[in-house]
Length: 171
Image (tube, rainbow, N blue to C red; front, side, top):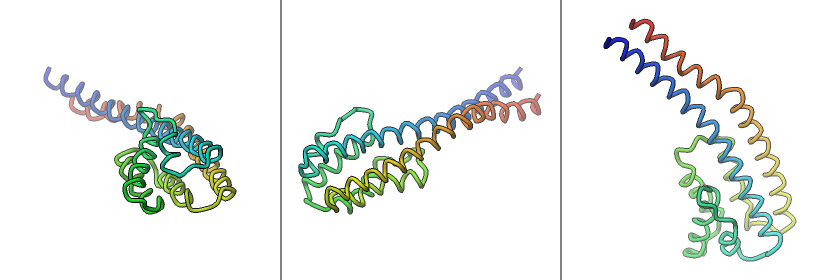
């Protein structure tokens, strides 16, 4: 009886690990889509209002569950306090906001890229950089969708399968 309970616990634990791995793929996709939405909103604010960046950061849609909007809010506060260049603080804030999040190195590179040009170039050059970044983000989002579509079901099933192998050996 004890072996049966242990085997069931093992299958359940490994199955839940597979489900959690699949959930990380879904979270990565939602983080990328969130960053794209923030980028589009930021581009619109810069294009139409042409205000200083701390003011623009305050006006961008503040959704409670948006890490990208939290990034802008944090940067706006830092810029108001220190009157510093955004390129110095952007990578630090990205690392802080997306710490322990399931993003790839390519995702992080795209997130950091926005900080490398915003507030550094003229209006026309901003538009070119935004277009390039949107294209790269769209490619990353498509890659994340494919990974979610192809790998998530496999990870869920693999977790239960890998739990079942030692469970059968225990019985």
